[in-house]
Length: 435
Image (cartoon, rainbow, N blue to C red; front, side, top):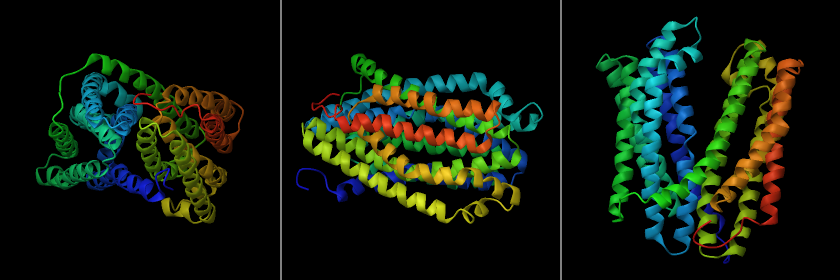
């Protein structure tokens, strides 16, 4: 225990990370409840617009994860000033990416909303475009926030990101009903409230940088090296995004009951992933710190322990899902046909949880070690060898919803095997201030 961080230290980082991760989904629930009273067209417009913006931002999550790994190594090597400087460069990089996203959404809002909403729902598309054009103004602010979370996690400060994210989302939640109903702005009031929260969050993270008294000028050599991690994690994110979107599209072709059952299961999966991702974030910070300090044995011991904790949590989730086989689906729907349809996916959802718990832990370990290219390549292999054949079988061979979820389970299992092999061999455990 003296040679490696204790469980208490792991949980001390994971619990605040979980709070920060959960703040945004909780705000979206409040926003959905506020907009829902405007009518179904407004609610559908919010769903389309928020989905498009959320997916675009999710692809940029490498700004947080890549920065955490780089800053953590430097912090572990006793170079806190340099760790914070990584945050400065990540902030410049995030600002650039955010501006690109803003321009792209402003240019493509109408065709993208029309594509998602469908030609038979012009009112939904119009509502989505109005919301999206305003909400996307916050894209550069969101990317600044992601970079800020990254460097603060790297120096093992989880408290400030938690506070900043909660305060910003609380502001948005308070403004939403005032602007939507009090100022009679309708759906556009929701978008304005969203941007106001992002302004506050970005300002708080920028203030945290200023307090560190580091040089704020861009250093292109550092930014170029950060782009390598951006490339690898970005490709991984795109591939995973394709997996989830294509699964929804395939389920939609099976019928309304099947797609509803799929959505219940996938949303539950995403919800449970929040908890598992909190352990991954703790792993990034602690593994990077130990490797930066050349504590190789301690890093390997920590990796084993975080995998054990991920497996334990995954088993607990799997047991809960199995125990609620006939109960949990009824919490989401009263439609008997949909409840029956969940039977095709429920067992697979439960089976993948223990493996998923370990995979999330491994993601955090390898990201903390800077092993981004390995994560990218083996994730692509898992999709190609495990998921894609089952997607084809579902679409063209009549495998149904069961075939689709067998593919998703194989995707998780293959990531478990491929990334687990890398973790066991220990090639990732290389000390030094840089990956």
